[in-house]
Amino acid sequence: MVEAKVAELVAGAGAEIGKVLDMGGVVPAVESGYLKAALVGSHAERRARIESGQDKVVGVNCFETTEPSPLTADLDTAIMQVDPDSERAVAAAFARWREERDEAAAQRALAELKRQAATGANLVPATLDCVRAGVTTGEWSFALREVFGEYRAPTGVGGAPVTGALPGEAGAELLAVRAAVAATATELGSGRLRLLVGKPGLDGHSNGAEQIAVRARDAGFEVVYQGIRLTPEQITAAAVAEDVHCVGLSILSGAHAELVPDVLRRLRRAGVEDVPVVVGGIIPAADEQALLAQGVAAVFTPKDFGITTIIGRIVDEIRLAHKLAPWPGQVPVSS
Image 1 (cartoon, rainbow, N blue to C red):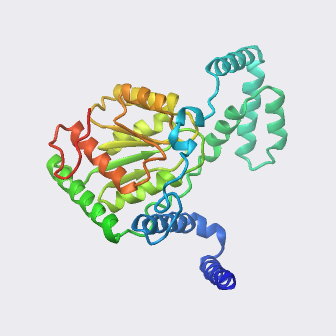
Image 2: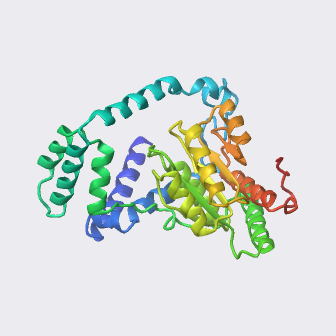
Image 3: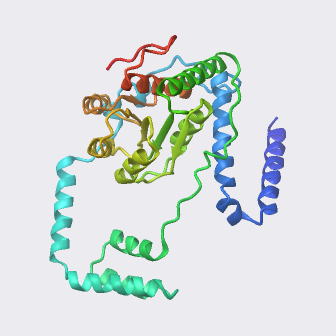
């Protein structure tokens, strides 16, 4: 059995390496979006097999009786959070340091860095001059962005294989959600429902957001997903520009208490009133209640494993926001 599995892995890896070489190597495979799309598609196919029961995962879809998981039983103690007083003290100390540096020298160093970057020169000397002048890494990186622009990697969502149907109960649920998506779009006269999946903050764990985006697409949504590490400003601008029906935020960095309210405030200032905001992440119960009180429509945590069920809840929230009657067969959500 072990030898057979090893042979299967070797054959599959060899075939995949052959595809990449045929494209001209890893760089073209990355730039074309193939590698990311293959990764996202592989995750989506595995999720479908787990949901249908084809793949057995202990504790997820079989042998689920166990001791409570600390990630789902008591989220308040499962997550280490920064002491707000310590955070404020660090921010204040940094502000004082910025005020005390030679601002003129810092700006001269940044200007020289940008000048050198435009010529293709070795940037190490100019970077060291920035360090000596007290330039921050943020200022340094934004100066280089002004010269070089910013690379946004392919998300892989658009190129992931479309899930036609899932077997058994999972397939029936997906068909029901597709019907709800189509009917809701018709009632709103919008052609298709549009979902913005946003990842604010600095964490790089994108799999959860990508799987939500893929399943929403397969359920009939038009999905707007621009990748990881977006700012609240960028998410708000995308929500307004794309005229979306729902904003879904995925946060695994523990920064939900700061970033989610920031997005909510910016959406309100932009006049976006009827677009529900849902949040997914490892979020303590107390924080969940706080987010709901601030206007978040729904919060999804690790206990909410069913992706299709989450998409169905998103449809419910869109209907509620537009004062539409609950979709038949769906459990009405409370306001």
